[in-house]
Amino acid sequence: MTDAHPKLTRIRAQIANLAGEVAELRDGVRPESEALAAVDRHIDSMAASVRINPFAFAHVGGGGDPVSAYPADSHRYACKFFPDVIRARLYEEVKSIYLGGLTVADDEAQGRLEERLLELERQEEQYIRQAAAEGKSIPRRADANPAVLLAD
Image 1 (tube, one colour):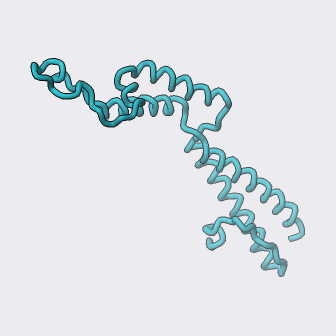
Image 2 (tube, rainbow, N blue to C red; image 1 turned 45 degrees about the vertical axis):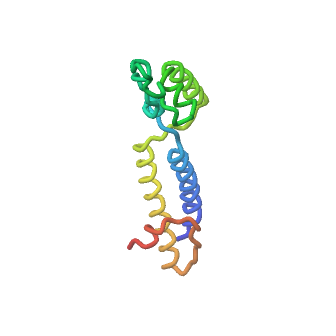
Image 3 (cartoon, rainbow, N blue to C red; image 1 turned 30 degrees about the horizontal axis):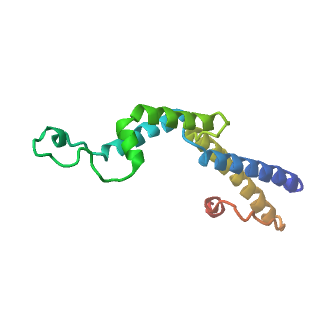
């Protein structure tokens, strides 16, 4: 197996590159449309925690506080009474981070890369086992996939 070393070097370089791409996709952000939908859900959730008591105005003897005193979080009150203003501001902030060229998480692309990575690791293990059969010792990478090492 005289050409194993150069081939193994190439395969390991490809593994390192693909592992980096997979990690980048894994750590990527959700698509912008999903992030904006999360803003909407957040505003709805915050607003829902504020209770309005119209009886405070209608009841002759007074009906308690017109607006719930708890939670005492001003952001929740802003979401209840000024949702469009809060939404516009949060949309602006979220959209601005996508202008910087973030990596958007893509489960399908990540799956394809992981399949290719697994195939390269299988090739790498095949070369290592072939070299061992020829009496040569090639050390495995510290981060080699255990599933590939244990496969027959």
